[in-house]
Every structure is written in C-alpha cells, then in structure tokens.
Length: 274
Image (cartoon, rainbow, N blue to C red; front, side, top):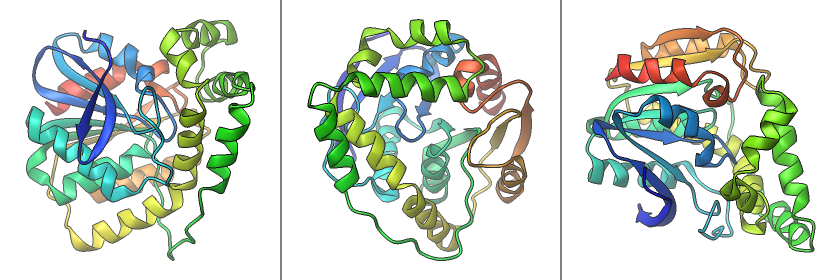
C-alpha cells in the first residue's frame, strides 16, 4: 500500500491513498467529517483489489477552502477519479451516499456498482437556508489557541458513540500519527464543522438531481446497521433500497461506523457487486 499523496481531481486538491490490486477499482467515500484512515480495516479485507481512499479538502495535508462543500463539487471530484481509474465500485458511508447516488445518476458510465454503508437518507420538502461559515471559522480559531486536544477528544467521543468498540481500543486506533495530526489541525476541524453544516443543502441538492436524472439501474447494495443510532432510520434505508432497486442487507450488531464494526460484510458486498 502506498502512502498518502496530494492529487488534484475535479478542481480540488485531495489526499488519497492507493492500494494496488486487481480492477475494477473500489473508491471508498467517507461520511461527513470522517478521515479516509477509518477505512483501513476494509482495505485490509480487500487485499486483492485496487482500492482508493481519499480525504476531501481540509482533511490531512490539504487546506480547508473556507466554504461549505457542495454536492456538485463532490461529484466532480469522484468523476475525475473515475476518468483516471476506470469505472468504479463506490463504497459510500453515511452522507457520502448523497455523492455516490448523484454520481451514478449523472455519470452512469463511471460507476459499476454502489455499496451504501449505513447511508444517510433524507426526503426534504423545501429548500433549506444556506448557513454561513462563521461557526467553522470559530472552531478553527479556538483549536489554534492551543486547544487542539479538544478535537482529539471529540473524535474519541464520536467514535465511541458510533461503534461497538471499547474505549481502550478506540484510543489505540486513534493514536495512529495521521489521525492524531488530522484531529489536531484547525483546518481539519473547520472542515468537519463545514461538512456537518452542509448536510441539509446537499440532501436538497440530491433531490433536485433525482428530478433531472432517472436511476440508471446501477447494481447497488444498502448495508443497514442494526444498532446505528445515527440520524437515519432503517425504514428510510428500506425506502432508499426500493428507490434504487438495491438489495438491503441488515448488518446485526453493527453501529454507524460499520467500516470499524464489520469490515468483512462491506468487503463481501463489494465482491458481490463486482
């Protein structure tokens, strides 16, 4: 496995890591505010495949752009990766399911299949207001005043509430140097905040994509965590599976961060898709 490198895709600098193996390529797409490092157990399960994980701008070595991320630019970045790597199997967690579905609708030739990992599902009835970046900038300022440990503490708490892992195991996992750096950087914490604030707008923008582009019949599997505790409910995920003609796989004992709780099931779904 190669290390993390900065590349430009779709007009944005992202950090990416490539595990070389057999095609078709698998693109791992993280949920809001989550680093690509969280996919490491899944990469290990897919040792025979060409697997790419990446961090969106602001995470890792790339600067936060100073704005809330939009659905269109997320799709543009992943489309550029498909142009280089060939048609992709998209493995999208949580909010990244918005990006994966939009990409498959807008550029069906770029996608071989989807594995949606405890996906976020929203059916907004009206356009949300567009928040500013003040909160994200405030988080960056505070973390820059010698309080970077708050980011690391927040990562521990977030992981503890979204996995079945014990606290000592989480602390060991998050002690990896790259994760320590990410959760201690002002730009990373600003990006985490900005992505969470962009959630409602991206959900609305996906609804507009659905109106313009019919579902192309791309093979898909929806992995639904039995113990998610996230904002989505299993009933919503069942509705999403019907909308996409996807298989729905309940994943017993998994919480929202399924890539940590049950990476083997994710790998099995990837192999089933292609």
